[in-house]
Image (tube, rainbow, N blue to C red; front, side, top):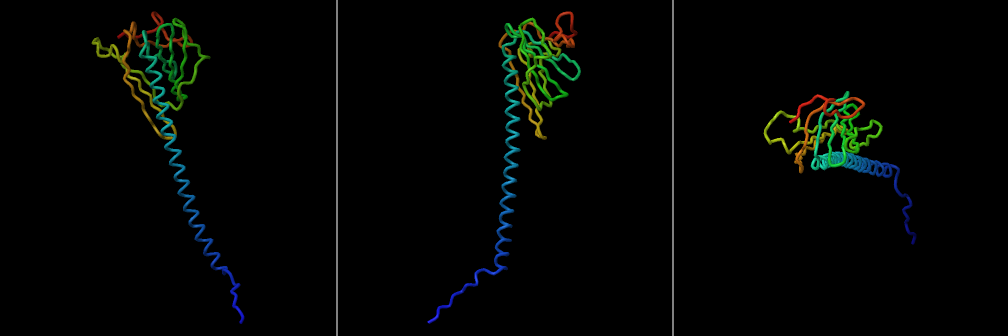
Length: 196
């Protein structure tokens, strides 16, 4: 008795149909993986930006909490300067609006900042301000508190960190002063300002 053997295998049509179905499934999987990867990158960028804004707000808060003297809002071009004196040191914070950066410098008390020695504190900064000591009020409502506002913008995602900072020391001198370009924050006769 002769056995019948089917050696025909798969037809060309069956192979093409199988490859077409496999390709459709793979395209769907690749699109889903790409979408998931993009969502992860976006979420990661947002979390990184929020973390950076919180870190900057924390750093500024630490400088302000122990401040004994504070000057704010000196301007030179598009830069806004803040000088915070704590103990034996001056802490200068500069918001460079044109480059979207916050820069930092620490000097000995009595010394001004040096334009060649700034360190980067934050990048992608769309706004920065310390408010509270630059208001006209004779009450004690703003005598021991300022508000730190840091806004960051990266790839269209904007995050703002706002902190109310309470001074632990009595502030000897809080005022708004003009910047002396090339010489640091003005003090005494060098600047114009109002003392609160």
